[in-house]
Length: 184
Image 1 (cartoon, rainbow, N blue to C red):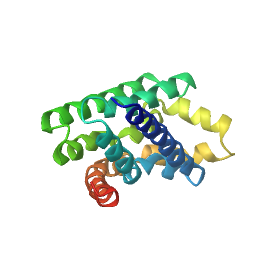
Image 2: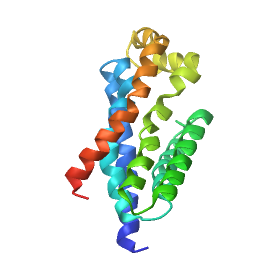
Image 3: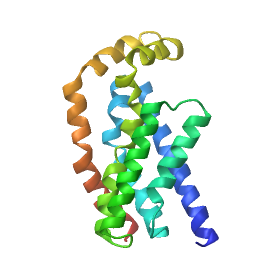
Image 4: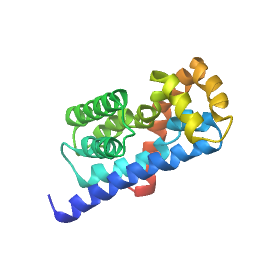
């Protein structure tokens, strides 16, 4: 692989992390923004993923993107076991789809993006897998009353299910738009 491709992939990994951080910041508006941002982040993720897939036409795009995220979150103490498992499972599924449908095909890129589009939900999964810990962290780190606003968002499982289900059509649309923007 060329040095320029390695640098491009590293840049994509940084952008992947930046997108997560930017969308996580929406939680300062309201907890629901943080909880459900994962439904809309595919519009940003698709551009990054498509560019990375165009630079690396073999195994590794999903592994690099989610692997970099996981490494950074482990270093800064943000990762837990559930997040790690979700990031790894999403990357494995993505890599398998890309291998199965072709590293240099649109179909392979499109289908392999769908699991990666769920990455933000892996990041925020602690709200549902460690609700007491998440509420305690909100009391300690967020403005007064934030934890009280979180509770109904966390408890509203039907909305969570709908928002997670919407990731699939949103990711398909996002990839189509990314293809037009990047003219692949």
